Image (cartoon, one colour):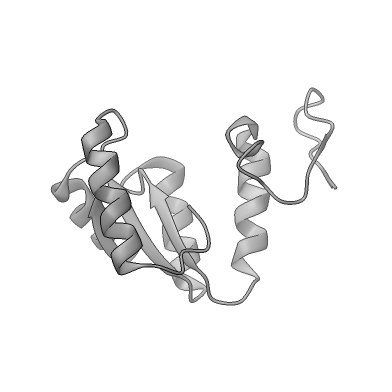
Length: 119
């Protein structure tokens, strides 16, 4: 378990995020998870919203540590911007508010990155 002292409401969190608890993680725990990934062997990682905020910082950090990053953004322009900001990676379009876009992304992702480690 990881102790997160910055927020007493989140006393202890699981060491690894699972599909059941990943969306409930506070930002501090997410950063600790990413730091753990930064020390592991090279992984194939898809990051949504990697053109700004924590997604941009995480993608840059993970690329610097040798991981393969797929930038999943709402538009092709935002994905290209994410690649430029991070200094590498593969751009893909995925608008999470549009189910058809999510389906196209999933089909493209399974074709281009069948061994995806982290989404």
